[in-house]
Length: 113
Image (cartoon, rainbow, N blue to C red; front, side, top):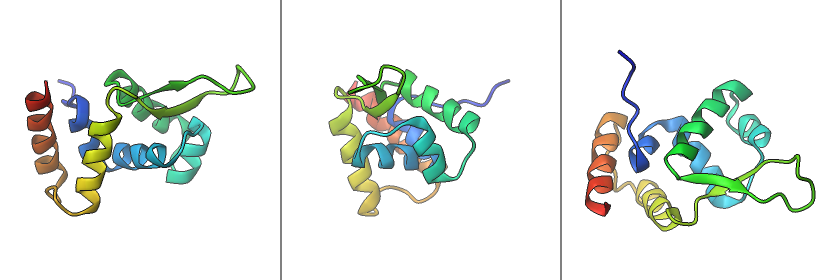
């Protein structure tokens, strides 16, 4: 049976995905830049990006000058929720253990609808 990943903000219980979203909250980035910043291979980062993209936490921005360049940013519909989650994490308001953080975020997803 596959491991349950979660959806929405619950995906941010994973430290790698949380780091990716933190990076994208600061500025739009290419997937290769994200991989370099967090020190993972591109295939591993690609899987995490796909999960975040499917949950509408991130999205593809229009490339400003070259259609072959893929830029990623926070999804505008969920950006306020993501930024609030990141602020709560930075302030230490969320549980430290990833399992508890995931359950907290899942509750927030249900509450927010």
